[in-house]
Image 1: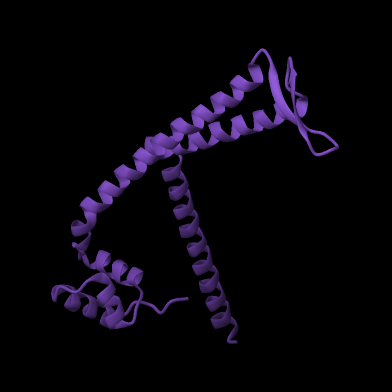
Image 2: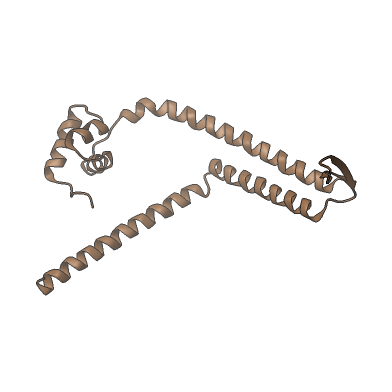
Length: 176
């Protein structure tokens, strides 16, 4: 468990922040993690403006990634459609390996059950992946998961803190 934040930690963060030090520089100077410095800064109402310098680059990168996701969604739909077209075509062509090592093209009215199952699995995989990528840009799903994980982490921390306090109280009550 990390060391508790002291008044000295808070004073050093305030002083170094006023001197224009970055979050990471302060963390190195006081021997604490950057997340601890962030917590102290938040509690003290201090802000690190370094993010403003990188915000345009971050926004541009997010737009690039969003465009890549949109293109990938389109490609996944094309693949799903191609697989479905192949299964639903009037004739189905497949390659079969002969015992002598040669291959021969086999044309039938319908795909064998195993081939149809493989195409169905591929179609499902493509559509599921496309839907997940679309959720990212729609803002659904991922934020809820992050929020749920954050709530779970807070609950676990609280439960462990309660358990630690109960153990401390028990030891104090029993004199051991």
